Length: 316
Ligand SMILES: [Zn+2]
Image (cartoon, rainbow, N blue to C red):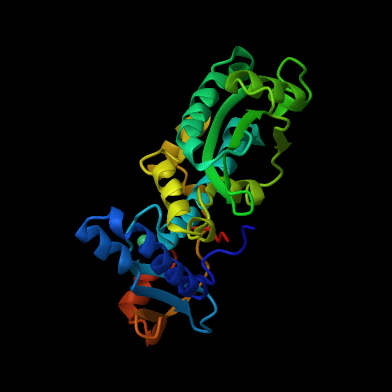
């Protein structure tokens, strides 16, 4: 799922801009006048730099709305979070000699009116779980991401957590620390008070650039699910608005701070692309598409934009 860096951005921007305008129709009545304008005109102006063959592109300037329900802004944040998580994992592996697990915690599907209280229950249950001695001993840190899906056929919702766990390298071989899947299930049932839960998924994370990273980084709600109807959008909106969607704990919290302060820059790759053109992409609202224009970079700009660190990663 996580592929090349700094590529295909413009190709995906077009459909994302259309989704932004679709979601706008659902969110319009919840925003202030200035909020509306920001959301609707999100990313209408974009400045990229591209290689001479125009294959590799990097966004250097735009007008984002930064609303978490905006498909463009959620996608951009996911790209940045994916890189952040990947770099943190790499640093922790090397500096702290740790490994990672990927855990998915879910509860049975629920109807719209139960969504808010169910997410509250989830948060409480998670905190309870991570205060258990057994877990405190084995788990050195976590990142948890709240996600919610909607099932149109059954008209119900499934909020769930994707969790990245940090463990000692000896976790799998040391009986004092290893927690079998069955035990995870038992503990999750206990803390949620839901004995009917039948599954807890847990597995070792093999790579710092794979699906686990993408799952944690990606959006909390899918555009096309939120856009099913006003009713469905409202459920997503009231469930996710104002909530902390991604939460860092323990060692992963420490490293998140290090990442933000630039201490982990040495783990970032250097951008090897030689940028040659500037690409301006402006949204034409009548034609519902981006109009593009290339200009050669000046010597000054070439100096300015080449040779930087890579700080985002492709996500779907
Ligand atoms: Zn936006």
